Image (cartoon, rainbow over all chains, first blue to last red; front, side, top):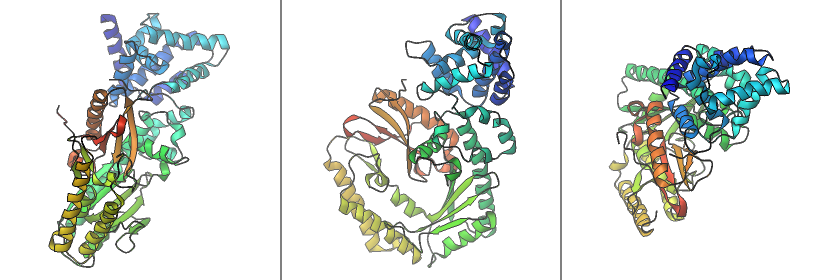
Length: 395
Length: 81
């Protein structure tokens, strides 16, 4: 244990100063003389482990350690990660630290036996780890070249080299490129949101709240998997900002228009969906969506609407078993997490009420100021609760 | 915590902003799934901090526990638990 801890410490120290791309790239410089490459391979993998730790990847490392040192099935990727971290630079001196180091040797020996160039041997083993359980970071088949631009992309802050990647290029949500994409998008998200705050303040628009989020790495992968062929460049809301109007007090969606004018000062919109002018097929209205893409290649969506509309759309209800559900997920409008959708008449009322809230806002009123609408919302929410109560204790 | 390709208990994410759903992980038991949800919510809190996203009442991703026999519910956050 003491030796392992020392090896891990050495590995982390050696790795912290390296990027994955740099370390991995250094291993590719090796030729077929496998033995000579052992040190470089170790440094590369230590760099990889260090990179993951340095970038908040403890979860993946922890998972790898857990699988290797338990009765669970460990993947090659797990063992390499653990072996590289524990083995540290000491591997070059011939010290063995269990399965990880043994697999590192296997890489070397396999390369020598089969006559593969060392880089191919490494790649073969790492790509083979694509069978690893979810949560294990592995290299995708097309990943090699992309790894080499990881650092440059980070420095440039752009997504251009990633734009054509699809779900096939990622084997899990813990692929570091997804995290890098998220980080780059997050930079845009924060900059645009801050610029919007300034622009709104300059115009004296204070009756708003701004919410912002960058699509999570797992969500980005989920979006790619949802539609075959979907590319990173095709995801239109890597960065999302919602501007909620707290109190609607002007008719004709004038507040929406003033906010949109401020938005246009900050970004160059490439598309605007004005659902106040044209509700969608199921009646969604009350919001304007603006889209843009920055020089970094980050796509952003900005939504402008009343806060009460957001609150109605995403209202939560309690089931008999004490669990929460969101009304939107009780409907058929992309909500399929919940197994028992609302009866059709309630779903129809849901969309009608969204439309009525939008129309009330267009008349310069909040829903609470329109007695029939207020009563309609209360009745709807009462009926949804009654429906859930009628389901019994499950779910 | 066991995280497998298949499992009767699944952790799903819901991107509230776009209304997109995505599978996070699969587990053998509800307890493991809840533990994964707790951990993933901590990650989300780093990726989509509540002070910017509005948290679980704003546009931070929601988490759903999906289990056998139609069990599906929104994970309630207990960040400090």
